[in-house]
Amino acid sequence: MKDKSKKDDITSLSGSEYQEAMRSLKEALTRCLQMLKISHYKDMNEGSIHYIENVSQEHIKAFGNWIICLNAIADSCLANKHTLSQSETYDFLTVAVATNIEEKTRNKTIDDIIFRIYRDIMANYESSDYKLKIAYPKVIVDVLAILAKGMNLDGRKIALYQVEAYYQRRKANAGTSSTVAKTVTAPKSTSATAASIASIEKKKEELYVDEADKERIIESLNSITSRNKKELELSLSKLQRIDIIRLGHLCENYSKLQRYCEIIHGSEEKFRVELQKDIGRKLSHHQLQRAATSIKQAKMYIENVLDGKFQPHGSYGINHVKHNLEYGYQLTGLIQSRRRSSYKR
Image 1 (tube, one colour):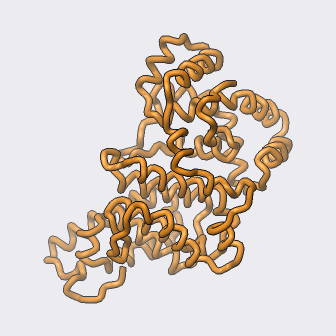
Image 2: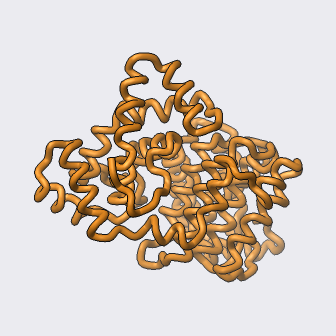
């Protein structure tokens, strides 16, 4: 985002125009940092402000405030050698999608790409090369620029069918170790394969909910919540498809959820051991805390989803409580992609 010509610099605007442009950019940047919950990082704030103060008019016109601000945060990560945690990277992608991809412009191809990046972060981020972790926000912004504007941050047009390969190539170029190369090009048949098995056909199955599936979900929710079936049917009719799917996954895995509840109330250490044994990999202390919190609040999550109480914050389409709980369920495997015909408790 470096300026090649002084005439393109934002400072070439008139005084009032410059002040308004900077006010708008700084407001968007503040909102980004707040949504990402990283505004406490002083170096991130100062570095990000420095980058937006030097952005060109051309870039603002081409990409808009949100991409510019997210790119400034990503540039600040690179300059300060600052790595985001796995959950912060996950949030970074969520904010990037919510602020740049309008619902009316989304299609199945875009949803597939976003889904695979989410799964890749969940499966492979913790084992990624240090340099890749530093560059991950930049990779995400670059890919989101393509999905939102049809071109990467350098202005090169990239077709949607090329984005998956482009994303993997950007990751491979960012990392240096052989471990990173393996996770990018040849994942093994362990939990790390989660990103690669999320094929287009798998995504189609996960996103589709037929009437038989809904009936099974209603039956399970009737038992879990004691709500009558008519009330549940009305509640589901008001939900987005993805929320119905997530409720279906929790219903399918409810016996496992109950088992985790019993274990965690008896011993959090035993829960840690059992969970990591079940999923076949170690989790960070932060991830274990997220998972435990989600397990403890499962009934509240289900009830609030059914009642439509998880309202987006502002105009960004994000509810952080809901998002964080769902992240915990993904860590535990309770809302992983399953066969759509098996929503049974």
